Image 1 (cartoon, one colour):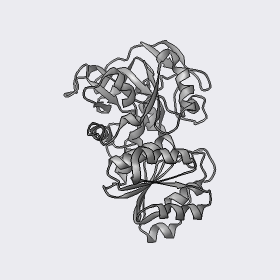
Image 2 (cartoon, helix red, strand yellow):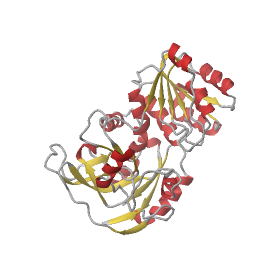
Image 3 (tube, one colour):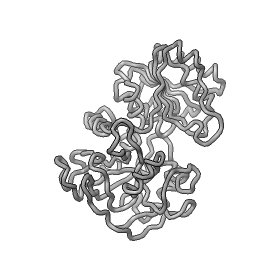
Image 4 (cartoon, helix red, strand yellow):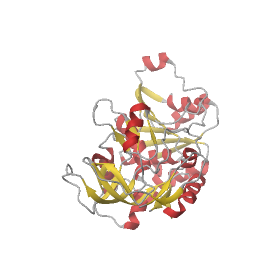
Length: 359
């Protein structure tokens, strides 16, 4: 098969012939039709993000494809099925605290690296081998529609955060980082889950206005000034009532004070979801007052990715018309132009923009 291979950090992807994946029990072989390119993939490939990758590797986290072959333990999947491939691979020998690797992207800890030794190669290839439980049926779609369905990979991240916080219909949500790629996805997901109001703080007034244009009056934009106390009060005033849940997806480059201003808008007995990158690139971490957390009975959820059943549930939201993939502007490249796709994704990583490779 043809594949894009990362052989060393700082070097471009090499497009070359690679061995076809070999099917094993508990595995499925997928013909990859479309796979998204993360906006920060260039920082993974040049080593800036210091992701745990044992090179050489075929990168690419998940994707959309058709089932080529199934193992003997698959009872629902059939050859030819359109599917979403979830990149979140979990070890099968500890259901309580499984080790995790993101296939084709990174791994967490020594156990995750062991997983990566087997489920190592990702979706920047014509075929990929995926754990059976990570293959989620989409129903009937066209090859052209597969490009837009790649947005599932972005939408699933905030969906996992809101599931952890047990977001309920009618609640008020604040999305810290709403003007970014994952943050704007969080706005659409919260509304699809029934949020009555989503407060969207940010500095880019054009993007804030666009969120209102897309989703209407349930979105309450707030222009940030950089003053922690003033911004916190402005966010509270924008909400029609107490803020039930704060979701943070700010990148590593953001000051912790910006995140703290948003996080501390949550009401007493409220929930906070931390899925961003503050402190991951060095520098100070997020400091929150112990008495405030304790006396207000604040629940803080650190969340990485999403539970195993999230993809099927999110697909159902799309099929019901509650979550619109049509919001995404897509740009597709073939596999021979994978390096150009990585550069394009880095330059076009804003809200509702999607760069895709179609092997």
